[in-house]
Length: 228
Image 1 (tube, rainbow, N blue to C red):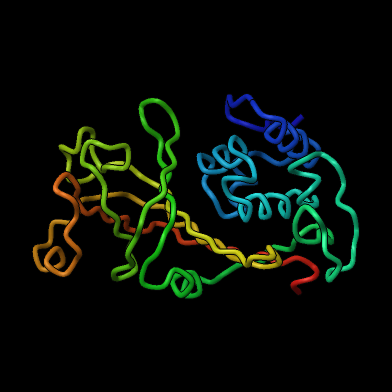
Image 2: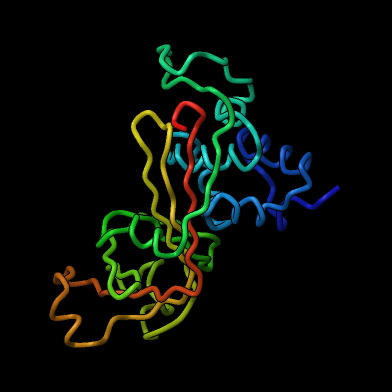
């Protein structure tokens, strides 16, 4: 049997269904995360917190696994209904969603000039995923954080550079028929250029601006049959 995770034991029913499906398909956790456009740390966070945390991310995972959304989140097949027929518990589910790929320019276009995203990295106590407000500058990601916090580049904020992180942002329509996600991976460093700092909003007294410079930029689109 193909090893599913790197010494990671699924803790929730959702995570166990995910792991069982990976084993059936012969996929690794890392490969599934890549196909879904997210880091392993973020994937595990999604599986831990369930659909109340990030439903679009679960839709992408369902597409990677070839499952209906309902099959992944609850273990029961989705009822095949007409796309316009209302459901009491949410939008109609009409089969596994379909993933597409975004080019690098399309990824940056989706991110725009800024917004809300998530940053994931591995700390002393394991994976950490936190929401961040971000700005895009010269195709890098800027965000503010406490120098002593988990998202700071160096231990205790003492180093100006250090550590690799994964940044993810996504959007989905209210009906969950289509959406997109962008994943950027690269090293972190404090912003030290005085000219750039003068242009940026002033962070709180305890905060500093951090830059993530991409090593890789990938993106996915997602669309259900009713959104095609």
